[in-house]
Length: 112
Length: 116
Image (cartoon, rainbow over all chains, first blue to last red; front, side, top):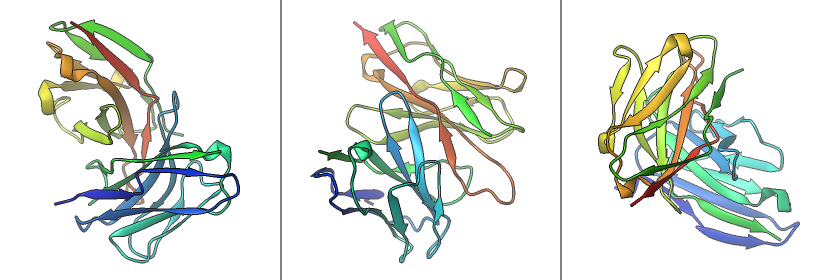
């Protein structure tokens, strides 16, 4: 049972480039989330989804887009990367509310 | 708006000593409460959670936490720390209710260093 898988694990982008981060879960979870982690700021919610075909903005959505065309996948896109998007990105999923998340191992993104 | 505060950014304890990590939250009602642990270069792992009922909850790896409604706190404790407990610890809160989206708000994290 793989749980939550994030690809890629590391990436370096130049300013203005685009990329997509993939999150895949094999637990049939309804809820999926994208967070970014920056030193001293904890985890901040970027976007989330409460089911297939749904997405919603979190606390820090600017500069990011998401899609959830299949229940098991949640994609995070950066259309035009900026140095301020240098961060570690975590995907998480949950079967229901109030029970906690299963996290992926993260993607470390550097924008130069 | 919900918020979570972990007052201690960095804590150092000796191996075998007791540990308490503080977490205070701001929320209009009793939220769901969680503690997660993150080892270097890894994702976050759920240690324990408070849903309802007994205010003292037991988790994995010998950790426990106590929910105190009057103090809006959910402090994490361990009676005897092991060197392998060195990690970053995050407290998180989630809203209850019919429109609950499962979103969690995380604190800034506390880094635990264990001295031999």
